[in-house]
Image (cartoon, rainbow, N blue to C red; front, side, top):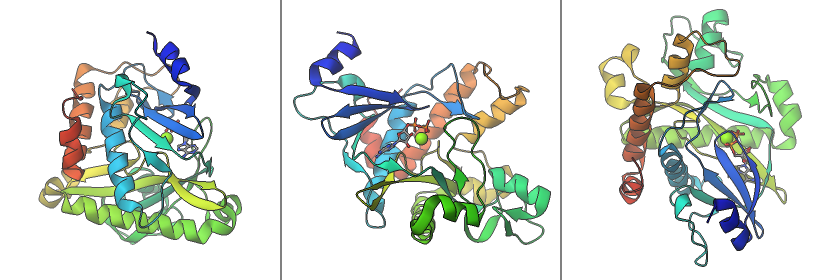
Length: 297
Ligand SMILES: Nc1ncnc2c1ncn2[C@@H]1O[C@H](COP(=O)(O)OP(=O)(O)O)[C@@H](O)[C@H]1O
Ligand SMILES: [Mg+2]
């Protein structure tokens, strides 16, 4: 039976597709199914990364479990109701409370990489904060920074200065800033003990009945940057990224102007992404890795 017919049978309605996740309604719940799609520079690529959706979902689930003491998440369950049989969603599903997403990407940074590195080279700052001179790519910051951006429905996210961020976020600004930094510090120290450096990450929060929930994904290689701790300790200036950065680097090397259509991905880059994302799951949440190993390529 085609998927659409099966869904109809169970009363599951498709709401929409994000770049990576497909969203469904079932009763009063929202269901997120993480696909193998991959996006870069706000463009969904033609190729998929086999099993990436399972790996991402398992990492996010592992973190949601660990961080609920800091901030509740929208997660209700990762299991299908007993009466529903949908083997194609095994390992990819998250049943969540529908929330109103805040239109902000809550970014925390502990190291100077990515956009922060570009800004540092140009202006000596990151997210508007003045940084010490002489930092190199990947230098640890004196303290983690909160550098929110807009969450654009289309096109690129733009950096928000404190005043604009306060205006968009409203009365919860201080609380959400503190939660962002606390969640990052927790993630960074947990990851460090598992042999990973969590350089930076992005959180999303939603509001429901006046309460704040963590939503979407959490500290995955799509939403964060990771290095291996052993690489960092050997030579900080030569650390391969275990995250989407390798894809951005690959795409930039092709000379692509970042307008659709994006270039094709080589077999090698697809394999490399698969292997690196898998390594992050295996290190962070080995029990989850073992549980899904038979489902992933
Ligand atoms: N609990 C929730 N309630 C409402 N919306 C959510 C919830 N969790 C995630 N979302 C939204 O679902 C979408 C997930 O799909 P994704 O592919 O990650 O989207 P995007 O293209 O925005 O990255 C995002 O727009 C996210 O804000
Ligand atoms: Mg998302």
